Every structure is written in C-alpha cells, then in structure tokens.
Amino acid sequence: MSSEADVRSFCLALPGVTERLSWQQPAWFARALMARMWEDGILTVKTTEREALAGTDPDTYYWTPHHDRSPQLVLVRLDRVDSAELEELLLESYRLAGPLPPAG
Image 1 (cartoon, rainbow, N blue to C red):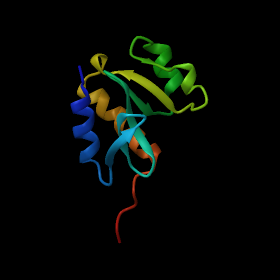
Image 2 (tube, rainbow, N blue to C red):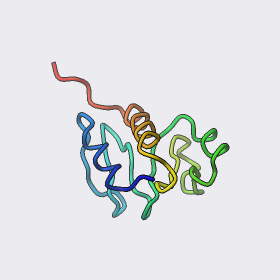
Image 3 (tube, rainbow, N blue to C red):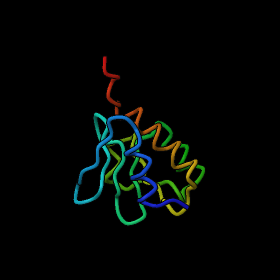
C-alpha cells in the first residue's frame, strides 16, 4: 500500500522535479506534469500502458471521461500498489514528462 507521502518523497528525489498545486491538488513536474493527486488516495500518472493496466487490473487502474483526450494519463488507487510498483509508474511518468537534461 502506498500513500501521497510516498509519491512526494519519490518524486522530489528525482533530478529537476518540483512540487506545486495543480487544480488545488499537489502535483509534481519535470519539464511537464508527471504526477498529480486526483483526489484523496488517487494519483494521476503518465504511462504508455494505460489500456493494458486498466484491462488487467481495473480495480487499481482506470480513467474518467475527463481523461479520454489524454491517452497517456491513468488514475491509480494508491492503496492497491506497493512501493516498487509505485516507483516503476513514477519513473515511466518522469521519462514521459521530459526530465531536465543534465547540466553541462
């Protein structure tokens, strides 16, 4: 089981990630939005596997009509994912959001 605190801790440990409010909810940004709390206990992340995730585990992964126009976004019930799965989801979302390039 994961929590918003787990999301915050992992996201802010990634290079270049910042936290600010989006739609009055905590959100984490690389170059673009990478994760946002949708509501209490529900996280929005980017993934290339939305259909597969929701198809194999619809009790954990789903989306609303609001997300139909954004095929990379999926909602995740945090109480149904462990820390390893959460980290995997957040790393993919971080890559898709376009992390900052290394300084140099």
